[in-house]
Length: 219
Image 1 (cartoon, rainbow, N blue to C red):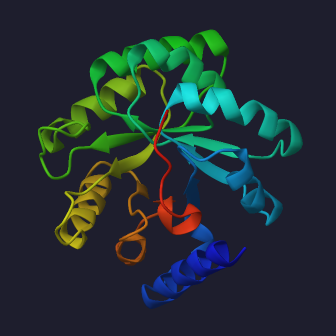
Image 2 (cartoon, one colour):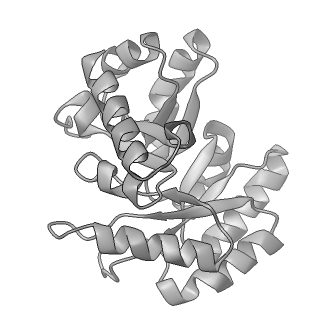
């Protein structure tokens, strides 16, 4: 699949510039709003890591796909409501949107019930935008401590920088916050800025439209 090879090539080039091994960068193909017909070509091309924004949408389309491709890893890259925590823990292999104490409580309870520890990224509101999810920068240490105390495996930080301005300073800031808190994984960079994110240390890039084309309108 041409788009997949193009994205992989661009990741590899950015990694080389940064002196990084591209094998350390996970491409999360964000398949939200796209149906199985759009996803299967990537699966057939060997890609196995996908991202969805909504628990309900993922639950509707991925069980059947996973029967055919059981080694798929599914990441929840959108905001998670606390009342969906149990379903999310059962369905996803990684959660990118841990952003508040109430969700720590819900996820810890869900993981204990399922007997399954799902790795999580703490989402940081890196641009201090009122309309966006994510915890405030100043609250990262406390939320991290709370999650660890609750037995949630926090592996890194995630952000969505403000739209329409240069993303690099925000990626650099996220990397600094992660280092200050002893975390070495960074979920940052999307279709328009993933190369910059790789240069600044991203370990997971979330690419949707550059792989799938224009997003379909969600039902």
